[in-house]
Length: 501
Image 1 (cartoon, helix red, strand yellow):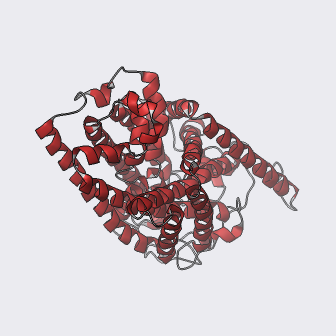
Image 2: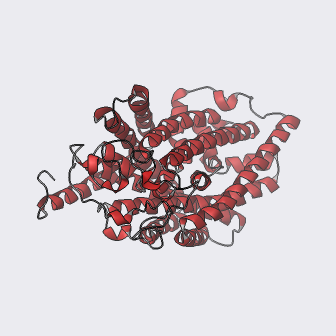
Image 3: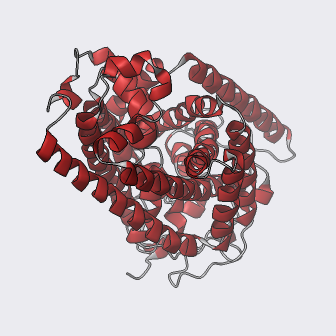
């Protein structure tokens, strides 16, 4: 499909300065604290050439719908529940499939809000750009700051998963070495270019889906021949007793499996065909991931030889519960196949996450919210931002890989950044459409009810998150507020700064 660039009707986002090159535009006029200050980005930094060429170092438009879906599913990972299945089963009293039903619904509100705001600000900054438009400069920075915690640490978690899986297959090599190798390989692919990385990622994703289908077919064959270990409805009702509180608590962990579908929005400046394609890809990836997650957790729960109470009593067994169930019911060959697929898939999930992190850093650098150096591109690729993201994730992943409790520390803080940014995303929808009415009278269900419900669900999930995660999230938020205050002060004192900036 030919790229419609900035002239795409959907990309204009109606009235009110929604051109991605407009900098502060409407967002900087009386919309939230800190509004009105900030400089407009260099128009040359955004490429909207219909031919796909980049102008003056802008991002290159080369991605199609399939590429977006590949990046989204790679980041999510089709078999993401493998690593957390045991924990979720124990926390939910066996209602693990229901946990993913609820988690999909919770994330659906967020995906819908993304679809609403992508057309308003089809920019690389994703939620950073959306909050700037709907709420103002200050909230926009905080949204980007909280998302940065997510985008920089999720790849580290994925790299560590890859290292753990490879160490299980080759015990003679320490996991931190495998983790470092995965970082180097995927970083080189990202530096090669977004299109090249998407092509390689497509084959990796195909491999993951084939392995998942092999598991599904094998599980069904075993269930038909030998029957289920637990009750057929127990993955939805629990194997002992049903507890809504327990299910909600497990949802706070399960949402980690979905983090990544939102990264698709980070490639809005590199897609051909306008922002509608990005919105469709976001919704499609979330829906497909939900179906895959519910299906695989339902099947493995029926094969699980241990009860949820036994898993809860022995946390050591939770991490390998999926593999153990497959090994006991199907065979070691499928155990090893899933492990290899998980190792490769996790590395490429980190590739997609690192690419999204690079785009976020690029966008915040372009708006002078982070060092301007991060906004530089080379051949349409934000290599400086990518290298910084790679260094941060390498340090975090290798540090965690060398500690027995490293994975727990990383996972405990990843959710908070993303969920906080998602809440500001929902607020942006209300701010843009309902409060400021930038596109006429709002649609109450789409622009008020859905985002408010979505934000409420996320607040409930944060409340149910671990105490350590809440503390880290609060510290990161406080640090962001300090940085924002410093920036605000500097701009207010700058010569020629507008009054009230």
